[in-house]
Length: 462
Image 1 (cartoon, rainbow, N blue to C red):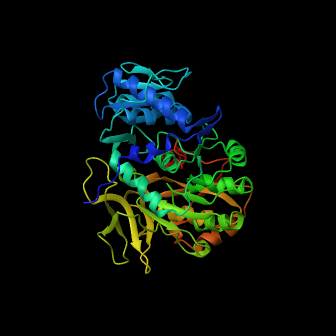
Image 2: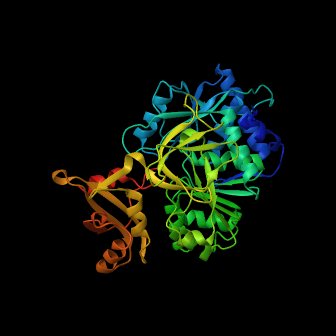
Image 3: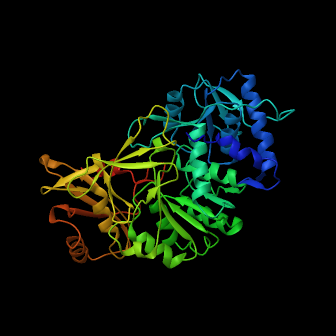
């Protein structure tokens, strides 16, 4: 059985460097400063009697203090739960309470504190020595994204995180010199940018505490010239259409993940940033961020679906209960599985295998709609809408008046011809899947992780 490194073993060799580790709105932080501050925090946590693998809340904005907090908890042998201070307060409080933590590392200057019983530990401790840190077996707990209530916690071991990070080092040709971080610290998409970058000795570039602040993204990209970006496809598409391509010109690698990648986005990418490689990643939170990956080619822009690719090094993918057309539920096995998950992990995602061995995503088992006797995924309808010229973003809300399924399309657009759109959809969808109502909106409602809030759209569609 292959032994995978503890994630801190990948990062520790970089901490003696005087290179910039983090750049945010407050300036820059070197690796040596990150070493000093995170080691001081680790010693403070040990002084509080922190047990091995004990949970510690890191309460911070997307900032240098989040990075210091995460690394400090790992160096003390604990596991961190990142609570984004930009979230609505009740969501912050609910996450902290569900974590079971008794200690919280707070960003200096936070005006709102989480309620007891959490004991606060300052994030700006300065140690007399860097010794006294230790390795725990767990790395972090995060909550799977959801639109209502508190989603369930998922705990990732330090070696699963080490494996996931090492797989990035093995798969991607270009080392990270600068990573443009556009993801909340409370979602696992931030894990890739933070730990991968630190393992490469690169700079974590944090434009804003709000991942969707594209004006700040443009400024920081022009100033720090990052090499890598990971974003949800909808946010990346808005950035390209919003004129940020020139400021993103330093990028060598762009990764989209977290949502279905539409073929139109591939076309936009290669038209505006042809020198940057584009990758489509797929992975549930329960599998440590990523499980499969596809390097996009211009030909993907005219394909019916952009593949989610092949399993990453060390991971195995299986298809369960495939129907006559080859579509079945994806199972994932490998060292990236979360604590307590059965192997293979049944993802609830529907996939098929292309002739060349690439996986194609067909949506969620629980998001299928039966329309006129035909089963379709909501994402297929949304993709058809987005492929119409002039539509910048599109999503579908579902209601059930009188027991019938009714679809409402929500479009972000400067204008379109309804008859032309209907004809366009009829070429791609069955008649029963054509939305009964079309509403033009200024923006689609989003969850804190940047994904479309379909529960809110379903509420609006009633």
